[in-house]
Image (cartoon, rainbow, N blue to C red; front, top):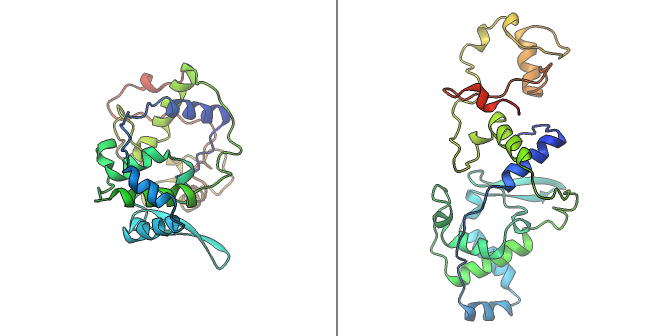
Length: 240
């Protein structure tokens, strides 16, 4: 996830737009009450949940932050989202339903459907919501209140301009292709073709590329025009 250096108004706008996206309604899956009753009293519930989590090779697709030799490192795959703090972000009922049938909630997900038993679901969910958490996660999050229509529209425009749809899916928005510029002939560009903006660097290609790699927005002297997907009028994405 890139660091976009958003202003406070932009943060509010994107937050408003994303929070206005209604979650898909789902019927929570009800675990067998006998399973819950037995395992709720078992002192090995969490350790057994972690064991099942590892046995199902969840870290093949998902990474977790671990401390090794005094350093925090991510281990695991990057096909799915990192799960280090996911227990502080999800509702247990939703998590059980998701693990049991991911495609039932999100048809295009790459998450496989495993043959979880109710015992598996309860143990793994308890492990995730107990151990993969961060009690300080929302400590400094401001209370923004109900979003306004202007904030929602600003957020939608920013979602498109910043290329969010290149990595994230929202129903009704087509995934963006070839969002970045074609670099096939970048080595043959003249300095006069490059946008150095206010960056205090030598005006040559090598210095330009180095600056862009270190800080992608370093060459911006003024606000850049919004991204315009091919075949769509620019007026659709102009600021209001």
